[in-house]
Length: 357
Ligand SMILES: Nc1ncnc2c1ncn2[C@@H]1O[C@H](COP(=O)(O)OP(=O)(O)OP(=O)(O)O)[C@@H](O)[C@H]1O
Ligand SMILES: [Mg+2]
Image 1 (spheres, rainbow, N blue to C red):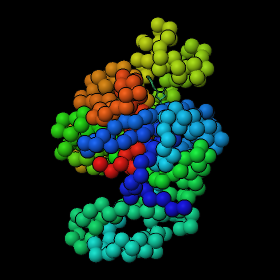
Image 2: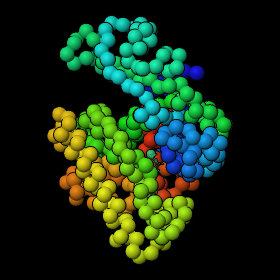
Image 3: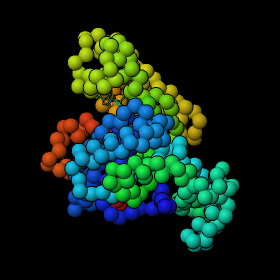
Image 4: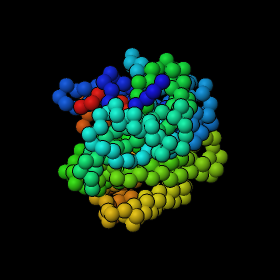
């Protein structure tokens, strides 16, 4: 089976983000006025070892979480859009003759694939997208090529199929973040036009940085840092199991010392990591400032995290709410949706692949 990383597809799709700690699903529909309506979302925890470094570690465990997430979503839809982590995808920008047809371009890319990717063609899935005219060469266009080993795709497809879902789109997580960015841009001054925006997705184990300038991605970087560190510290300090620590972290009920002795040091560390990433970006690129920081991922649900990051970086900071401008199905709780929203950015970007608006 061949998957397109880029091409937009039309049927309604469930966006499915298989992260390190959960399977997350989002279902959107059109609100009939050029916007989106949130029909439903769900999160189902993944047991330890289910996903390992972005790969399926235990297929049965992933299938179980998929089944539960789909049940909680309460949808009849079975067609899905999934994504690979950016680390599993090799992408390269090349310049090609602007007169080539899509077919000729495809043929040329396949013929020259060994220049771009270190695997043989029958081991990989390869796709490309024309980005626009090449800057220095009027007869050429810039083309983005993306390739991934087939087995990485097949593992995820097997997990989805095991839960009765049909995979229509295989995207890349960083591209899905960029897609979903259009949903949070409305939270920013002038909807982010002409501005440099750093999206920082802090999950359980990874911090994914994606910088957009004038709504186009100009920089990405992944770093190992996440809320798992805080969970471990809670377990250690208060003698709790992983599950107990996760629940306490989200719902409260920890001893009084938690706030000052455990949470605050973690939050300061987080703000420092963001500041460091910001500095690395400005010092290694042509951009010497960032206008906004958008915090996403489960760690963005920590209260006042935006203020703390903003104080540390001196850059205007908001918590991502991809549901910001959406109508919401009345069976959902809007207040809970705002809390859950930052961790659902990728799943939203994937769900949008089925509804080009
Ligand atoms: N209300 C909350 N307060 C503090 N931490 C929270 C809250 N909600 C979620 N988290 C933390 O966020 C992390 C999960 O975030 P998220 O769902 O974005 O991770 P993930 O996508 O599974 O991880 P990764 O992207 O690293 O694979 C966990 O460490 C969890 O404890
Ligand atoms: Mg994540």
